[in-house]
Length: 244
Image (cartoon, rainbow, N blue to C red; front, side, top):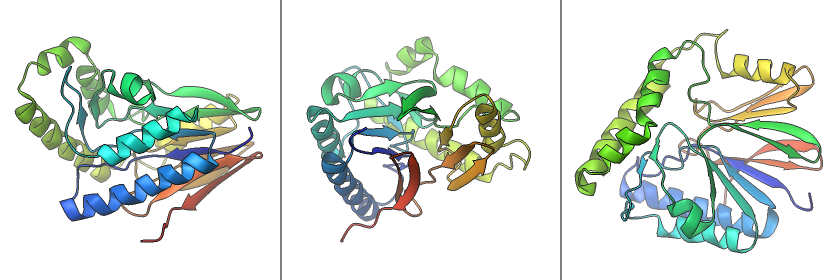
């Protein structure tokens, strides 16, 4: 690796009031501009938007600056990877064909400088979260998604937005138990040979060494923007505080 790999998660664009949204997006765009000069790759670990439902010919308005900044990265041959989260209701080909971002529906394994990484959003990986696992199968069902796409975009996106708020409230209030969390999943993966396990989803920033590996949760930009940086066999979580 000649330059670092960057990692972010859980920005939830579309959740806040317009003034807050504008401030958050400007921070993220400045981060993408920084990545343009300083990163080799960027991994987005889900929930860039608080809801995303992409119709065949319609996407929700706004965030043009973000899309442009992401496209600037891919046009400079900086690979951008998006692991969809529980608020990503449906992606078609806008990110892949228009922006050049690679989309993944499931966790991925990557090798960076000889180290084995397991990357995922984190949804559906907690053993006692049966209700969400059932809901996820329904939401990711292609037939159901295609039927939903027949709804007029104004109503469909409103409904997706309402559902996302319910999902976010459920996730933030649910007690998964000390012994049955994303950390437990990460420990098992580390025992199976992974050097780094990265998740988002829970909005709880973590950096924990376990045996010969590390469990990392990137938290959320809704509280304090930060990003992961991996370079020269060193991983860091760094706050992102651009000049206002």
